[in-house]
Image (cartoon, rainbow, N blue to C red; front, side, top):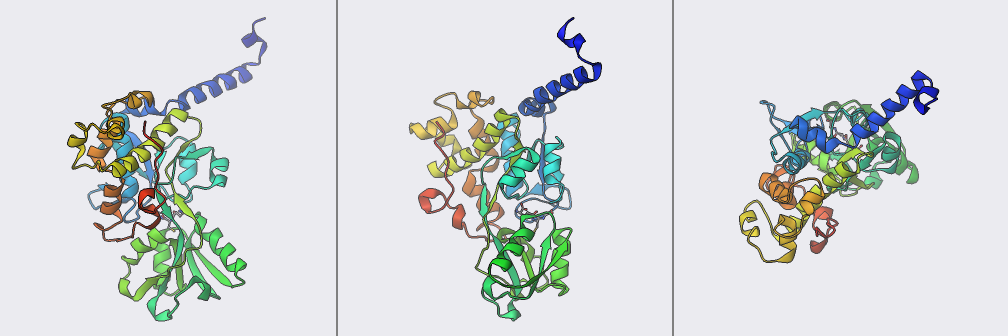
Length: 341
Ligand SMILES: N[C@@H](CCC(=O)N[C@@H](CS)C(=O)NCC(=O)O)C(=O)O
């Protein structure tokens, strides 16, 4: 009796099913190319990172990352379908194949990788958890917050960090958990809490939505590491590599002075590192399953890392978040791309 016939029908079909799932799941690049569109999970609206305007046009740091991946993978940064996801639903949506990529101000943690079978592809933005308080409270440090009522968004790393930080410093707190950032901000504005806590980058964005932003301060202390990273399913190494190296290509471009303004000159460059990046030397793009000009497409579409940072959250944006840890390593920060060669 043959192997297949010796198994029960149900078992055989379960195995076939498992086979086809793993074959399909290792094919994200092919699925994206065949569809002609990248499906990218983003936030439901966070200025600077991912937000849609009244015409439904998305912008932000995470949005530009999705566009960069689309430029590299399908040659068109406009071919992205953005799927807004709440904090609570985002990782299951990725796991269940509802999106090809999650770029949603999500903190890279080991427990998330284990629980959801996902892989973070590398920190695009080093953040930390901070506190927003009314200026009139005269608080200047996180260590002065004993007894605070703290508004946080449910389903985030934020809540656990509060519990741990206050306990570790023998301070009391009362958590007020809300379902969305808008609700958290409203609760803070209405005085249902006297502290709003989240990733410091988000506090910069949320403060601008208050009636009088100048009457609120972001304390200098951060109480956690929040390396924000895109994520993919962990069963498709080729796709994971592409997403990882899109970020590195943008960093490498900044380090080499290759920008959306200098990209044509870069194609004529004799510098070996520039030639590797833009594909006039080597065959790295083909090795990734893309084309030799993959990095050129990225830089033309969204610019290098510094351009994306400045436009969305830095000097050229309303948020004005200092580069800080997100400076390149060569300028004293943590952003460091391995050799693109
Ligand atoms: N980086 C943290 C926090 C991320 C997060 O979702 N923050 C909330 C605000 S505290 C947010 O971005 N909300 C936007 C939304 O839900 O659309 C995490 O990964 O848990």
